[in-house]
Length: 296
Image 1 (cartoon, helix red, strand yellow):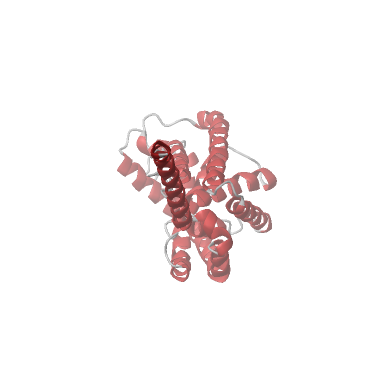
Image 2 (cartoon, rainbow, N blue to C red):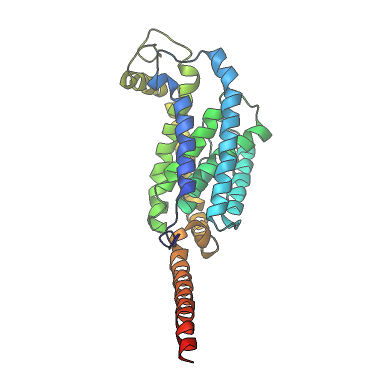
């Protein structure tokens, strides 16, 4: 009977790995919030960033392997992730960030999360940030935070994973605007805490988490909110124009079996029942054979 209860009961290891990856990144980026006294200096951030990036990359490899294993060792979902990452790299190359805040690279991680789930959303976002930076930008100490932010975008999209396709697409349009603002605030955590000041929008060591977040928001409003809002609006525009067909493709039959373990549960359970019946029949044959021999 060992393993009987496990048949048809998928274990979402990929989601757990994705959550652990996000938690580790948030702990590092959110250091000024949970420990404003021991916040690292700019030099310390510069020295630690390569190690954090190496840990993130290792986590992404583990996440990809877990997704592949959960997909019955088939490559459909990972192939879709690779395609989305390549498309996001192309978008970043064509629309370089910084031109008035016009930026659409968050759209595809958002769609990946909504179409393929949490693990694929995190994997798409973080990988796209990492690969596109290596190809088209200069890696800096902000790269681990950038990978985290893009992964968070994919995770937010995963909140719509089980929402009907049309409703998910409609909900994703305003969500994209919010994602632009949230991503800006998260990115501001790197650098802002290293420039302490005396005004109410500057970081000050020793403040409680609530006050740190309030000051971070004031700083975001003062410095980057307009750009962050434009980023969100341009992301929402791309989602509104191309999001529905992309979402339908990601949720199509070719990927549904690889991304929805529950769709295989009935077949697996039926096969297990047949194996159990065959085993019972063999056991009955072994039990009746000695009795028949004694009669003879």
